[in-house]
Image (tube, rainbow, N blue to C red):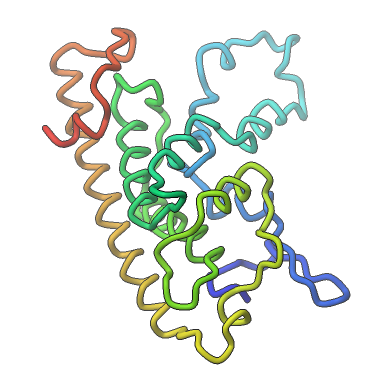
Amino acid sequence: VVNMAIFDGQVDVLADGQTLLDIERLWNRPGEERDVSQVFPNPGLNFNEFNLNIPVEDGFRPNNEETFIDFRYEVDRVLLKQLTDRSTNGMLTIADHQNHLRTRILDSLIPSSPRHDIFFVFSEESMAVAANQYLFPVMLLGDMVDDFSSIELDVIEDFWTQFRLPEGFAPRSIRFPDTFDFVAFNAARQAWQEENIIIAATAFADGKDIAKREAEEGESSETGTTSTSSDVKASTA
């Protein structure tokens, strides 16, 4: 048990009692990692003109799902850098992840964004998943008894690039058995999850408004307009 929800089949318990996360199972669709992932590209982005028009004899053979599975499990280093660039003094915070969440949604929706995804899916369920997902690494991997809001940048980078937990990792309830306050931890998680739902819903509405305005102005992703960031556009929406 790691103070966060891990579903059946996403954890392997060894004979000696050691518990290992099954990273592939954890992030697999339809698991907890969907559109607007922190570091993986939206699945719909692989349904591009090139891939959709590959001749059958050149790639789309039966059982050739690796074309899309490999795409889904390859960490997007640009997305990872967008996240890690938000760090201050070698630390990433919940607020940094929240800002990253907002940008990911806007970039997925706005046609002039290089990451515009015409197959973007963001239902209420997806919104709730994202709200929890963007808390997960900080709250799971943090090693301070009463600070649930920040984590070392190196820990996040290693988690996403090497798919491993920090050396000597133990959840707070085990690391601090006498002083860890689960009630306070859960209250913080609930509050930030509710904040994330509001952030996600607002960004989704802003992104749709910007997309509509771009359509009305005759703008499109083919214009190559990338000088204004999604965040700046949203601030003027």
